[in-house]
Length: 135
Image 1 (cartoon, rainbow, N blue to C red):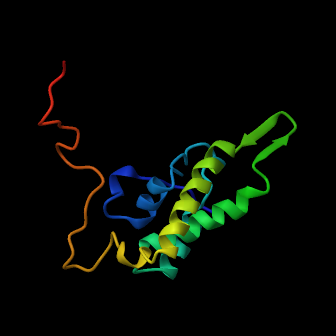
Image 2: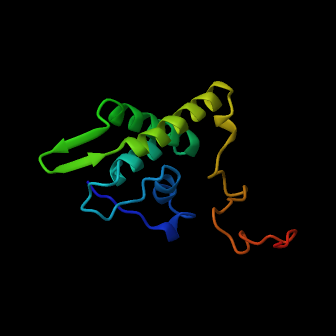
């Protein structure tokens, strides 16, 4: 299993974008901090090649089921606490489940066809506030 995250590839690589959206970006600590492996993310993205939102929902569902029963682990002096991430994933899961029930998921395709414009997460000037002044 491999665990990698390259934020500079977020706009071109679905795996890195998925890690960002799931807040599963901590891949530097000997492969024990990230909840999903690159292979898991890639496999689900391949199952839903035209529906990034559904792939995200399936990965969130997997995380909830995987860590829902066993949130905190302790073996000897070493302990792993996933409860802070579990709260995030449960809220995300509930929100996405509501979207699916309303039929909104099919319309949300961040990676549409070539004709559709793909929006980037980060862009020049995104932190600008042209209408306000500091008082």
